[in-house]
Image (tube, rainbow, N blue to C red; front, side, top):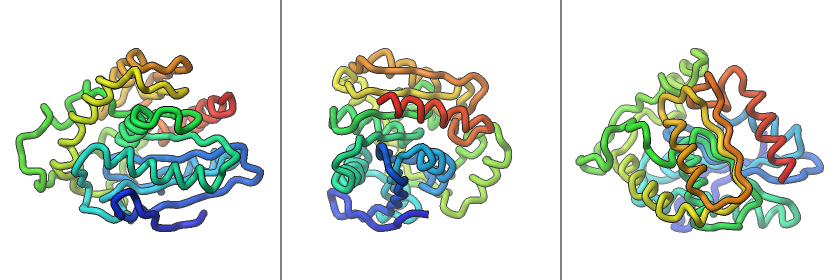
Length: 267
């Protein structure tokens, strides 16, 4: 699938990216993945998007999978939206006549929410899935953690990702899923969350906010709080009963894809 390339970000860090072009494309979607994962875990939704006329640009966050950078490490929360901006700008440059949308899951949703807040009006709409935007579920304990940023902890997210045991098993055994997470990465969340709270009125893009009601990693209250606070006039919130964190990988995922695609078509 697609064209693979390394794209230099704002500071020269090269991000692994993949472009899949739809025939007679009606729009372009940029996907931002979550903590410790990689773009290949979005193959299924990419296929659905392509079939519906949306070209897809995916990239791997710095320090993840095939991208450069210290493993699962961020110096500053701004690196996330600014890396995303690099890829969005590329998608816009290569598709000047098409609307561009951004989808982010979990930490990728954190990335997308920051991007839309920092760069309002840059895209035609954003979709958030299980996005970490408030930290209502204290997954890592009280933040920031009083530990050196260079310390790494084991990735124990696997159990919470999905209700489908096959997805959990694949996640745990996936060589491209990072097995360790730096304290440095975890400790950029509180500042970024504070920024999202302080600047919620500046998030004005059309937004579709999606969350699984049974998400064990990121509280669905994060999405309800964000939805209530943001300045967007065009906003939709869907909480899926019975679904866990990875709504794009749950057994009912095609229903979720249909919701995303019908929203994109309206925008």
